[in-house]
Length: 191
Length: 191
DNA sequence: GTCTATACTTTGATAGAC
DNA sequence: GTCTATCAAAGTATAGAC
Image 1 (cartoon, rainbow over the protein chains, first blue to last red):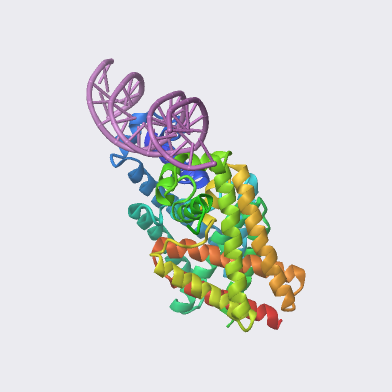
Image 2 (cartoon, chains in turn blue, cyan, yellow, red):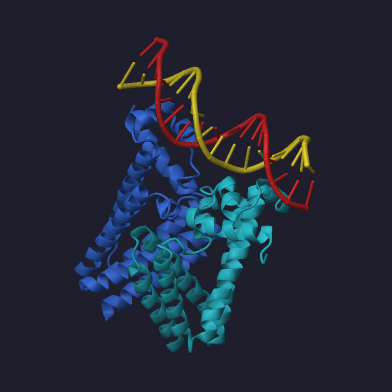
């Protein structure tokens, strides 16, 4: 078989955490959907649910960063890259019945005040996104400070739009904020 | 005593849902912190946790809307109102050790794909915020369409900033997006 | 080492004493 | 009506068979 048991567990946990959150996902449900024996969790993750959660967060964060890099590489310029990313997010939302949004936002909010180990994992992922985005905009000509501020705003628009689009079951928030985000990048580069 | 048992339960659930989410808050913890007997939950909320959750969501949403109205009433203009709201959010984050952010965002993400009754409650609250904000900007001179788009962007910036600020335990995202939001309003009104 | 069965705790919910 | 005792189910974690 192509995938290992550990990979199946991590793939499944990534999907369930994204849709149901950390607290809402039981380990029994996890192994059932992953087709893995219960003991495998503690074999591969001696630290239990928390260790599994931390690894899932970091793994999901890396994959999502790669998605942005891939889309940016194909876009002709920065405003287009942002526009394409938001459009892709909207498309994915519809295709998955509004379940596949940010891979770690739900968990990030759940653990922010309840589990510092997992909070740190989400913070590290967010910092990696911000750093990558900042580097992208500095390469386009912005100063470090302006590039980081722009990154925080664009990413905040994206995360906020995920919340509204999922709750309202509508792509309107994602489409509208995508246009605003693209315009924000265009103006920042023109200034 | 000034508060009723039902109010104490709702106040406590609002606080716990905001900090720990819906799935992360047990009813036993809730009654313990509210100083209420366990049976009171089912006396006041025959529908159990779900009914309590729905009422908490709608109640928290109304209170937060009133907060925006109050801040807007004191501000000299729309860009200042937005700037003040973000600044107040940053201040509250620090004062509460990054626990008091959006009152329903965590729950909204948790239930979006798992409980349609609660998802609808969060959607209704978000729509009420968007409607109130849209009315505010139309009163300032914008068309309905532009006012709604601006509202979605400002609110998305706010929600996204809450996620990053809580995870990173920093007010930087809230301060930076607050400046961007205020500028966005200023430019929209100038156009 | 892989996997099953079980231990122990906590969950949401209910019945009934007062 | 207010509150306590208890239920069945699900939670995480562990021990041990194979």
